[in-house]
Image 1 (cartoon, rainbow, N blue to C red):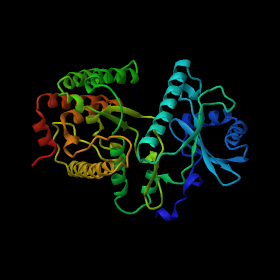
Image 2 (cartoon, rainbow, N blue to C red; image 1 turned 45 degrees about the horizontal axis):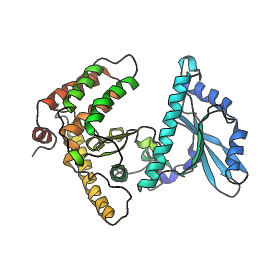
Image 3 (cartoon, rainbow, N blue to C red; image 1 turned 90 degrees about the horizontal axis):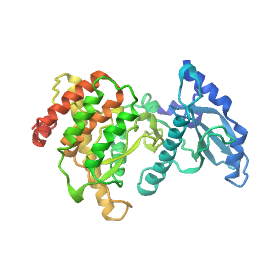
Length: 380
């Protein structure tokens, strides 16, 4: 039961869950950090108020997190950027990699502030940051608001029921991020696959190049809505590990924003496959009971998103939100454009069989019109 769980920073495992080169990476990184310099920096932000650092810490793919406690009860989090794993566990990185990591951190911090100011999504407040890897602390870092909760993944293991609160509240977050500036969808679809290919490395997995080209060819046929085109923010790392919840499984905050992309409206129609809600490859029919259950789940997800969008639209009319948002619909999840874009999400898995499967799916899409695509996903 959730009542028996240890919550907040007391539940942090200090890297004990890791072994091998990852454990070596953590140890080397900790030895590099000057905790006294970190505490001095944090103290200076509050008029030299004394503070201490928690012995426990939490480790993710890119950051190590400590809690900072002030004598007056205020609690913050120090989010320390870790270097990537290299051969032999070395923490040495090239200047180009360091520059990219700094740009990624800048982008995430800017995204967090943008979303916090322009939506109703609860995001930890950023109090300060230092992007200089040669600073006194020993790494780029940010000081952010502490939220006393656990990841949804951990709580779900001890929480009874089907956890419907998470999908329902995820849908609200999905609708809230349906805002954002850009030029045209056609330009995005022409350039994004090329940028994605570069980010995946110089040695493409079998089928990767063919899939990218197939998508660009298909995207060229997408109709332009002219002045109706819009862009929004898509968080493709939104999963149970990045959502903090309370004991009742209510969403407290979303903590990771480093995989956010501004995409055309149709690409905003994404299923949270990291939470177990995925979309069938177009044209692939499977009568297995688990597949049928998935179909029912994604249809229900699309229905609830439409319901939430309509509710949010009413709030927009009342002036409760600052930016115009795309009005999500159930059918929008199954448009040719939305389905095709999912191939670019799957290609990031770097699996040849995934590429081959979605390459066939893109070919199927190119041979069928919008009505036929909708009928495939929403029969009857």
